[in-house]
Length: 363
Image (cartoon, rainbow, N blue to C red):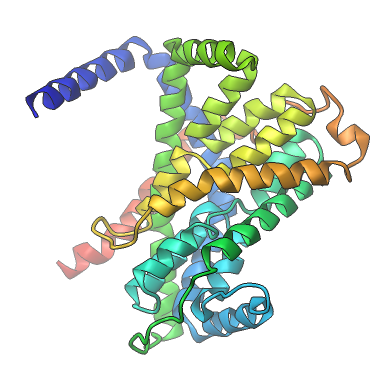
């Protein structure tokens, strides 16, 4: 126990020293994370998180869930309550499905075991990220983005079929009383603000951490070591490690590789997700939740491998120019105004005020 505390203290001191030593690199990582939040994360996720909250707390959402359940019940033993979650996980983006599952568990409309299984196939990248950001801007090919989306949907369906093969009938749970629509809308906006604040915090944190690893030479050392053992070049290994930390930055490096291998590495990263995405999903649930996240962590590797396989298959249908070596660009996420970081901090601050205001008023 004493040894662990000593190692923890030593690691904290080493991290503090590295932050002071490479403060400029860390600051650049923070700015890059804030730019990604304001250019990609907030515009693509915030509206869908509000919609996800409404789907979880209104009769309209239950009607949508029933419709999706009827559509897929011939192929998937999908619980009736998960129809809307299944759909929104593809439309909204990575943490939207997790947010809906957390709401359903809190409302006691599904049990924690069902939520644990559903996380395996309800954590997916949204079309706006895959088609517009990765396909159109990073890969320079909208058809390539569509191929990534189709590959991810196919792999999620396979994961769902395997995960739910032993799914038993949902136990009898208490009936849920829907709140008035105005109340549901206000709560959905407030919950979306809290969620987007947490998501942006993890994006910025892991962007800064990746910049620190790059500046201290740790990335270069790992890339050289793994490359020497596997025969992979350092650029490929660096893109892989970056994507393990934060998926957007990893996709940027993967696209810069060019050719089919850059496309396939993107396919793996968007479905295996990243440590940043895993913690974003975890933050959607209360601290002492009975939902288990081990199945999610294990399924990510299978999800990434399946998406890569389907992407290889679909790549044969793409025009040759879409996968031509060197046709991919390393263009980053959309450029924003010079004061993007300050504007994003103000936006996150306003979200914090909106989240905390009810508790102050009630206190």
